[in-house]
Amino acid sequence: QVQLVESGGGLVQAGDSLRPSCAASGRPISAYTMGWFRQGPGVGREFVATITWNGSRTNYADSVKGRFTISRDNAKNTVDLQMNSLKPEDTAVYYCASHEVPYDGASTQSWEYEYWGQGTQVTVSS
Image (cartoon, rainbow, N blue to C red):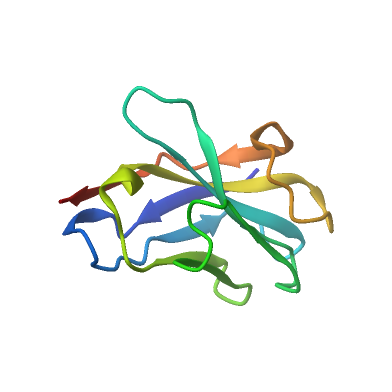
């Protein structure tokens, strides 16, 4: 079993940057696709970004493409999400998740992710 802990959220102004990080413990994440999802006020959880186990493939939601970058450090068991040019509509709780199947692709489907963190709040003011 793996435990995921997100950090690095906060309150920023539109146009600013943030870099949430996800630290894993209990099991190496090096064999697993990792993803970031978010849930804004009054909406369901939505896909943000994903990265395959070896970092060879990434996938992004259209709403964040060109502004967000997902990366991982398997030696440190961490996954980061660099968020630039933040907009008020990016306001949400951001969750890190670990895919259920090793060596799989860059899945965008939340139901394929087995382990989830508690989330970190990102608030962007206009």
